[in-house]
Image 1 (cartoon, helix red, strand yellow):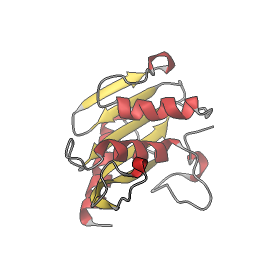
Image 2 (cartoon, rainbow, N blue to C red):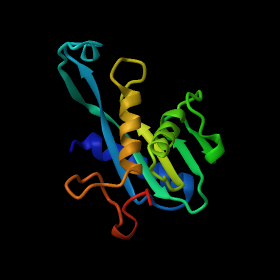
Image 3 (tube, rainbow, N blue to C red):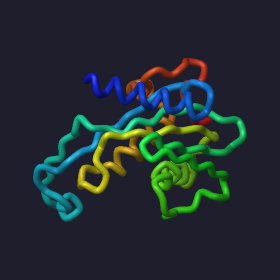
Length: 165
């Protein structure tokens, strides 16, 4: 991990604690990416050569007991809170990437507990570097039950190591 990676993890953790008054159970990240060749050819049977970037999205998370989700963007200094009836596909706003992960997991039959999630990212927005995919993957890692052969947690407490029931 680079010094920047540690700085971004610290920023996510501090943003979580400052926003919600308690520490997250973990911090998850996913890198931005770029296609060296093959932009939009993968779904047309073409070849692609994507590679991960050092810039990444980071999500600090913890469970809530009330079945609601709070999403906080450190970079935009905004917080959005949603209940089950407010998870609407294709809603506008930065938080829709996080809410969309909750919605998609539920549509696939996975119950998702309420959670607080804090997002920070150094993947440039709108630059073709898959910043939205990085946000969604980091949120998915935070919300999905980890498998024994994958280590998705950074600093999760064993007693509360996943956000799915």
